[in-house]
Image (cartoon, rainbow, N blue to C red; front, side, top):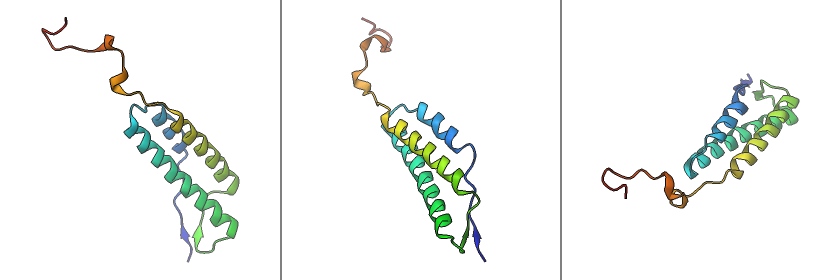
Length: 104
């Protein structure tokens, strides 16, 4: 009997887009990039299963839908990788909160 694979959530791409906008440091960038790439890998695998006509797995999406998701995920990953991480040591000194008594 064929194994039914998990559906790709419809909110996957918007979730990644929102997380990409919230990147603050290299750790954030690495986490969302890894998540995006793992989902992209799943989409690629589903497409391959459809192309070879796998009888072992049932893919819950059609190929055009998966190709759309793939292109959206690639665009998200490109955006994630283009985010510039600012070094906290390079920030201007105007916004620094000094401890009481050291305001200068």
